Image (cartoon, rainbow, N blue to C red; front, side, top):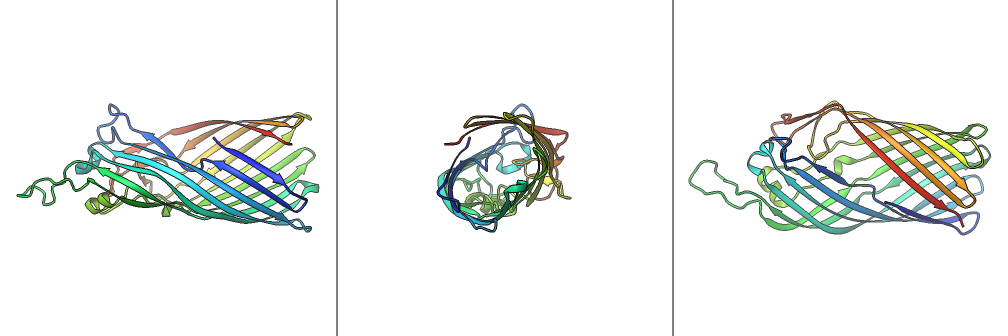
Length: 311
């Protein structure tokens, strides 16, 4: 769910407040579906609040920037034979706030519906109160020492939502026809979830991701005074190494989106549907780097509705 409000103070200055849910996870392996990973799940919820100001100059250039606040929480449970002695581990990350910023520049020429903008979103660091629990760990293997509750404890875990660059552009190419596109880079490699007890026992964290660059290109067309539509194609390159975390079991993607827009007086309603072909990947659970599951021929489907009102 999301909400945005924009106010135009004068020809040069405008402001916006944006509420969105840009990051999250909801993945679960059924207990009866896999001996290796059955029972593993991860839930992450986040809501980001952004307050922006934009100043537009007479030559078409503009600058924008503002503050971003993010509230997030999560829970991860590792279950199955693939996790060996830490199967049954659970971590809860209590709700926490973090703060960052956004800055950017833009250029536009309304006569040809042209616009280019570049926006940088900083990382947002959260300090989560953390509760870990899990099976007993035998520190010396089969030996005289008994298994100890080394995975149990409370601590603080620092997690950063990744920084990103967004380059977006559009231009008119014919009467009532618009060409648009974007390039989005996300520094996912700095997104680490390293609970204290888990790292002490295993020597590694819960998630390790690769940076992504997503390309989108599309065409919009106005059919009547009330109806218009758009179609776009997106592409995210797969990494050469297809070993991934079971908590994010994809490697690249291709997608197509279709949208229908209805405008009536001050109302504007946009309805869209997106289909994504997800890249094949192999899930692994730590050293040695051995595939525990093969993720093949998967897809995702998304639908959305946006309602706008101008006053």
